Length: 433
Image 1: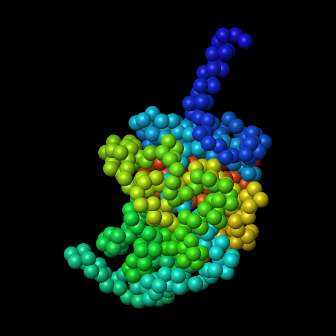
Image 2: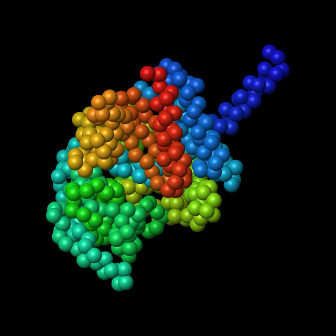
Image 3: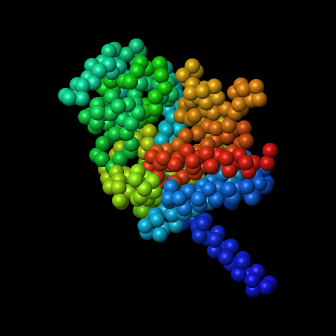
């Protein structure tokens, strides 16, 4: 081989090693991987993923990203590009750990449906059956900023498990309701997982006494509903939410890095959280913004607040396993976590007339998006998924048999839609129809 050819090969290998490091720990079976072409992908087109991630890094919009794409249960693309920590020059690894925030919600929704299968929970049950403070709910009418007092009227009905699963409970987030925000702050109701000495029992007990945004079942509003479901899991199962998920979902599926808190030292694998500076429009680390203590919950702090709406950490491979189990109708690698009919219920339209559009709605824990037929009518499901506040996103496409996950760590990233849109486009354009 000529010297020039050898040099070219060495440079190519170096680029691969830099952009996609060998994992510090690998739990994947070799049989779960496949050449892209064997699963109907154009290998060259998949390189568009590398390109747009590199461009967003160059523009200071993300520190890097870990990505996994699979079809027919076979992983065809699994890379980590960029940095786990820019300031410390730490390259991102495919096995690094990410705070997945609201991607906790689908997992907790599965926990609820497992308990439903066992007859321990009915979807029509009032939440007050499990958390008494939710009895006799009220709907907010007025709020006085001067003395933080408020008035409310009786709600038209009690909140049910169904309302919580579909975000039609009337319970909001501080960032989704200006009127509820000061009330939640006064009563120490956190939006996100945190390292404080709190429990979901104490928080949901307080939350149940506070007013709702609207009558249960009358509207869809994203909020703390799944945090409440986390407490329902605890009451119905007799375990903490962390124990329940480990015993019934993460443990059986061998999602070894999907946890609320870590007792062992995973500091070298825990990604740094960034946010976007509103002036420069570039990312800055949590150390610069003062967020480092707030987002330290997986490894430090009280380690007691099992936030059902935002508390889990995971890896792209772990979350692929979860997504593949859903795509398979509740089973992965011979381990069944849900009945097929239960998965069908979770991934069907549960909003009815409250749906977002004629092709997009919500099930139990997942958005349900359909492709549009030639005549404009809704067609096959092309996306069951959700995202997280720290800029993580996943999709399950039952039509194309694709599961895909992308993870970075930029808190409330204004460029999230750009990241997700480019990712989805790269996958769809790479499929050989």
